[in-house]
Length: 322
Ligand code: 8YV
Figure (tube, rainbow, N blue to C red):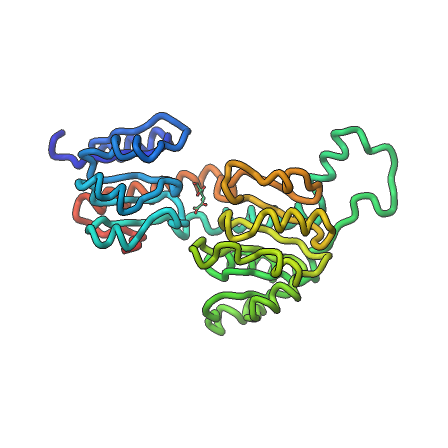
C-alpha cells in the first residue's frame, strides 16, 4: 500500500520475519548472501525510509547524503562500528543495534573457543582424521586447564560478564578484568571479579578473552608489545572484532611459542584470514559465528524488525542508539 513506509533489507534473512515486516512496510529485499557494494546499497535505498542492516554495511555521511529519504537504520548486530552515529544523528536518522538477545549465545561460544584452544580440540581432531593416532603417549596433545586457572576478560560489558559468570561459577576460575569503568561491587562480588590494569590483565591471565566493542581507539589494542606481556602458557580468545588484535603479531607470537594457543572468531579484513594464522596449528579458527544459534539469529532479526517498525510508525525503538 502507498501508506506503508518503504524499507530495504540488505541481506537475505529469515523469510517469515520478512513477512512480518511486510505487514507494516513496503519491503524490498535482496536474496543475496553477498554484501552489497556501497553504490548498489545507495541505489537500492533510493526512496526507502528504513534499512534493515547486518552490521557490515558502511553507514556514513556519504551514504546518508545520497539517501535523503532514509529515516531509520536498524542493525541486527550488537556491534555498530560500521555506523557513523554522529552523521546519522545530525541528519535525524534513527539507529538501533541488537544487544542482549545475543549475549548468552556469544558467551557460550567464546567459552567454547577458549576451551577448544586450551585443550587443543581442533588440533586433536586434525591429528585423528589425518591418521596420526597410532598409540597413546603420556604427553599426547596435552593442554592447559581451565578449572582453577585465571580468566582475564578485556571489555567487561554484557558478553564479558556472561563469560566471567561461566568461568567463575561453572569452572572455578579466578576472574580478572579490565574495562574503562569498574563494575558495581554487587556485580563484581558474586563473580569474585577483580578490576586490574590492562598490563596486569595481560601479565596475570591464563586465558584472556577479548570482548570489547571496536572503535578506532581499540585498533591493535593487542599488538606485539601487549602479547609479549602474556604468559607463554596463556591462551587468547577473540569474539569481539577483527582489528582489535594485530593478527600478524599474534601469528608470530603463536609460531614462536610466546603464546600457547588462540581461539579466534573474528579477523582483520575477514573473510580473509592472515596466512600466518592459517599456518599455526595451535589456533582454533571459526568464521564469525559466535552469535549463530538458530533462536539467537532469529531473535536478532526480530529485534531489528521491531525497531524498524517502531521507528517508522512513530513508536519507541527498544534498543535505540541515538
Ligand atoms: C554478527 C556480531 O553475526 O552482533 C555482532 O556485533 O558480530 C555478530 O553477531 C556479525 O556482525 C554479522 O555481520
